[in-house]
Image (cartoon, rainbow, N blue to C red; front, side, top):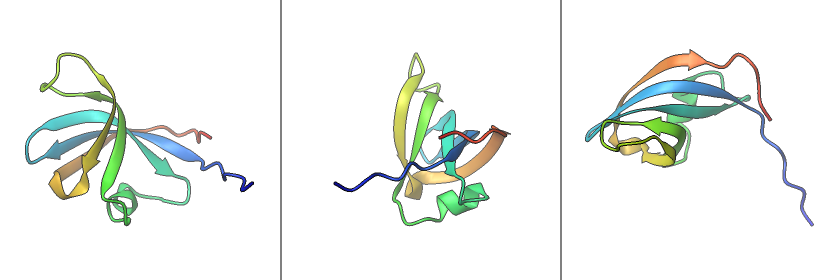
Length: 85
């Protein structure tokens, strides 16, 4: 059986503007990436966002996958300085 490698990451609180809405949530930046632009420019079509708030829904969502093609702006609000595993 193949052992799954545990990826370490940093939590990054961000404001994300898409063509249709605005979200505030937590992104997960792998330790081998230094910048949000690395995350935005990797090969994946979607970014994972947790603890998401938006005026479009009445209560926070635990998880959203946002299509990168729809993103217009990303602003980093807070970097979690401690690495998580």
